[in-house]
Length: 368
Image (tube, rainbow, N blue to C red; front, side):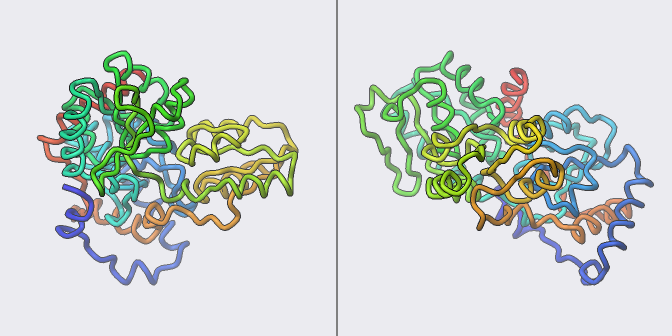
């Protein structure tokens, strides 16, 4: 079941009382629920969350860290995932059946994950098998639906994150001659290039037109990239890099590998969210940085590193709109409903999907 199907089944409207309450009142109510529920409640929070939400997270992290922490938490009865839908699905897959996972607002999805649905993927796999035979191993970025993870697990593949993508691609090539990388073409391209695979040995699968776009003979193709992208990171451009180089030649540029290949090539550094955070924290006092990643995180890094000059690589960048669906009123409503025994927005991955998806996730976690 994809996000939109889930929304059709259950998407209760936020009661007006929560919209009218002040931030200070809502914050106090969240603290009260957390205090009363104690270890029975766990709030993992993604780095891209708003400050009004991330302040209450028991743990902050990127996708890999939150997946591991959710799997390792055996005390919590309720896991309220402050992130997006695919992250909550991952938590439901990895946690015990007695633990329930909730998403404060079901509209918090991921446009990248929605760029590869299971019907498209199964159709593509059949056509790619006709072209390449049994020489392909599928990998999927964790920014994908549970159904896509299950597809990959069923066919011997694994999930990857931006932190471990190189390790997982190397593992995949130890198993098969080629890989299919879903659903983010930019992370796949940047990762393969870093491992020494020439750009012209990579092809792009267009799921809309159902065609393979390649510049070399098929037998020379090593990487098949799904034509998907992050709507936030794709908005960082070469022009943004040139503008920073022109106006602030001493400023370092660090970007996320979900950015376009040409942007990553021009940057001083590229890496996962966790890599970006650690690099900024370890940077010398007085250093200057332009960061190519989500704006909530950039603003938080500015606040937490006042001894450095930090800007967004794209001054017109806005936060991730779907991640921002999680706000203080929805969080408060979700927590109070759980405590009252009338919860909503529970994330449930069907067993038939969860079993194969867990195979893909565990193949990654075993190599983390």
